[in-house]
Image 1 (spheres, protein in one colour):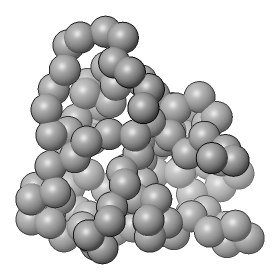
Image 2 (cartoon, helix red, strand yellow):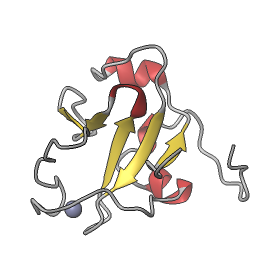
Image 3 (spheres, rainbow, N blue to C red):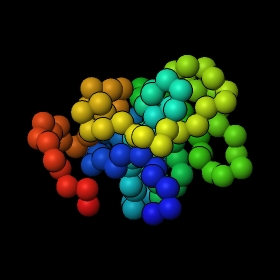
Length: 113
Ligand SMILES: [Zn+2]
């Protein structure tokens, strides 16, 4: 992998589909954060989809090189990028995307593969 895209998570696909996520069947979900305010975004790497609103998955944008990002949902900045230090699992569980996790884990030292 060339660059870190975020923290990969196991998601509950049924819940995502219920809320209108665009799934391709080979989905890999990550949580990424704003480099300025640490606000969290859900990202489906297979289709370059970034979900903007945890309550309405119809709101999303594409993260494609050369395409500008919309203003950050959280801090409103137009010159933001995704942080190279994505949130850890505990921060994700506690954050706005916690509901998409397939299971909540309170163990430490989960393996990286
Ligand atoms: Zn922000």
